[in-house]
Image 1 (cartoon, rainbow, N blue to C red):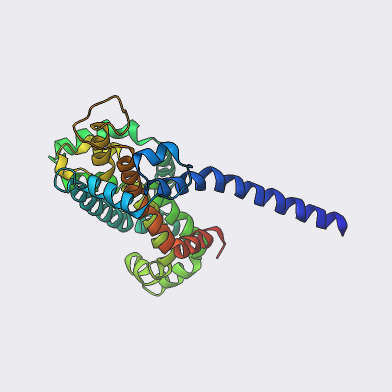
Image 2 (cartoon, rainbow, N blue to C red):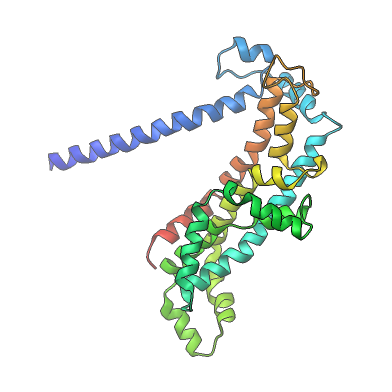
Amino acid sequence: MKKNLKRIRLSSFIIWSTLSFFIVIYGVPLLWLFLAGTRSESSLISDFPLSFGTFADARETFLDLTGYNEGQIWIWAWNSVIYTAGSVSLALASCIPAGYALAMSEFSGRRFILIMTLVAMITPSQAIILPIFLEMSLFGLTNTYGGLILASSFFPFGVYLAYIYYTTSLPKSVVESARIDGCGHFKCFIHIGLPLARPLLALVAFFSFVNNWNNYFLAFVLISDTDKQNLPVGLTTLLNSSNALNPQYAGLAQLGQPEAIQAAIIVVLPIVLVFLISQKYVRSGLNAGAEKG
């Protein structure tokens, strides 16, 4: 009995120590980021790293950042919303039915499609950027909203999540019974598969949102017009043309380190908010996919 208690205590100690380690590694930099956004240039150098600045400094920095080129940053923010909403919608419309079909149907080439889905998951996006660019150029979709949305909606991880979810949560016997009663594949998906997919929808939508909101490389390659760029590309270009990252460089935009920090907050904050709002559904989606139904 005492040995079991010691093992439990040791296991708890290891678990909490590991969690504490990752909280420090990932949580402290995030805390610093939000606190540093309230401080001035001199405060960033002289004050304690995790100290809070003033609302006046935070407001002045925010106005300097958003005032660049008559509010250019809001155009980039709106573009990010358009790209992300479009890509997430297309990803949901394609990933959920595809995962359902792979899990519930037996057809020629099913195993090959599953293997190719896994290969696509582990293939770096940089490796296929040239074929994507050539394909978009062929159809005249470079430097367009539709082109980037279409390219960004390719989400094999979402297909795999849907496949695992339906495989573990929906018995094939239920679908087979419906098929015997005369229900077609599409009706089975609409009336059986889709109503059970609420946790799955939240899970795929969340990961797709994070993937597309942070989309830099693909947006950088496909979009050349400044007014069509998203936040990651626009802010990176802006900060590279300022002296925020290199004090020795007299940039075109008069922005310092406080503006660079608030620019990072503007990119990170929506992801944090979406996670806080949707964490219940994301967690239920992960649990549902991990349990045998």
